[in-house]
Image (cartoon, rainbow, N blue to C red; front, side, top):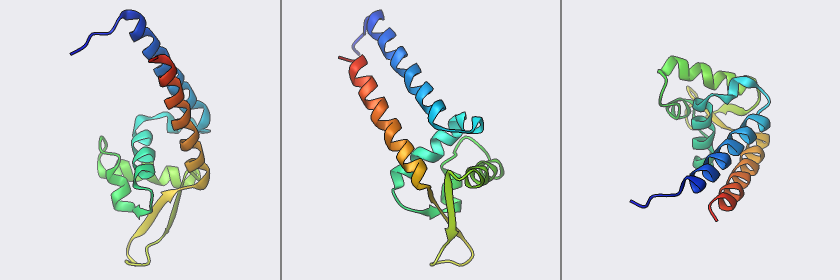
Length: 121
């Protein structure tokens, strides 16, 4: 395994801190600074389509099902996620990212990629 200099490690940590600061600034509500929301939002972004509410709860893998459901409901209430009827199963709901959150995540990923490229030159 290659070792990196302390200077390179410091550049990496600064980039990581900048990325964290960007995440905190683009989300309007302090509740969403929690890493469980990062897991939820990034996994929904990776799916690139609506998923069942049950699937979305499973993206918050470090919490129990009831707590994950509360996180999900909070994100829906604050407008970060959209909940809609499932046309294939009337008993379930579908969840997807709001257009605003999709744009925010796109900008966040672009910022993070650029920042880490600069730090790792």
